[in-house]
Image 1 (cartoon, rainbow, N blue to C red):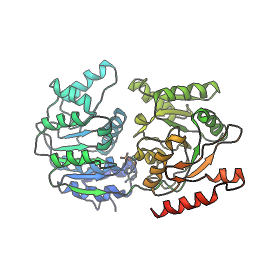
Image 2: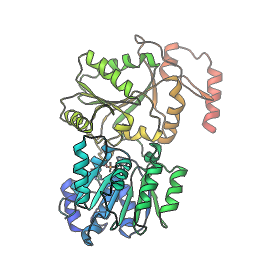
Image 3: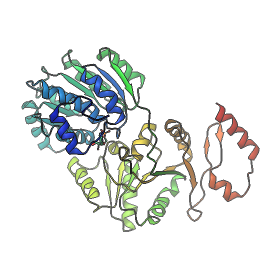
Image 4: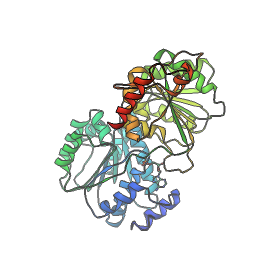
Length: 417
Ligand code: AMP
């Protein structure tokens, strides 16, 4: 479906074609008509599906057609990276429209507070904010929402995971009751249903199935004990000299620092992104990576979510992501591009096998398990609770099936249940 067919205003259509979007993505096709009709909406879609345009384009359409005074739109997001990224997308979509926007987030220097305060007092049409910082501004009286018409909760499940439930409720309490509310989320946990029930009015619901990684992305997982993970990373990178852009995700800041140190010691151009860095420094690291001055970045999962970088050759998940939903976006930044290619590798230790197995269920396909090279060490056996099976390479390496009967029996049972 084209954007023209969705009935969007000419000014928005011009910006979309300027940005090179030709066809609406599935979530856009499903969500935009409901939003155009003024309905509240619950939408299940992940980052990378075009969800930002799905909620922003129809809202901008209304703002262009029905000029208003004061802040009309509030987008609440979990992280500052996402706030910045969404606000940048809004600037693109609203390029030909008289609509102003501002990103409001914490963690920067004191100067940001002042400039955000000024922007808020100037009553930007659209505010994209993280919950904590927005609440501080609300409490200080820096922001007025009496003319609010649209509220968007983006990555709502992630906000609940990050402990923002109470902050969000407090924000909702100060907003006018009469408004259109759009809730976007990758999953729909019970607490979110509760929130939706209390604050959305007769919402339409749309959902796109978790899509499988693009064909061009080769995926595999290494079975590896923690003490061999760093050495394996060295091996994997050494193995791929033609790969210009590599991202390594890890769940802890400590690991990020350790990986960066050890890659630096081997002479790699590598930088880390964790909460140790100020916002401005993080942006600079990402810019150097985009410009190919840095070959490898190592980032924590939370900060990584939403980072939109094209043309990555290799993604390594140093740990199995805690949140199964995170696996997919991390491995498929280029979902909307048919020509996406690359390699996505996940390192799984014994404790993480069960979690990895739930990821496989979620994406509906089994990912090939590999053993680490013999010169590094021995891989743990692939076990996921009642299902125990050896990885492909282990079978070949041992040359025989020591427990063949038992394993095949268990596997048979597992596939039925
Ligand atoms: P999002 O899911 O909002 O994070 O979007 C992921 C990426 O897809 C962003 O870089 C968007 O600019 C891009 N995008 C969104 N909609 C489309 C579309 N219909 N066609 C091509 N690219 C798109």
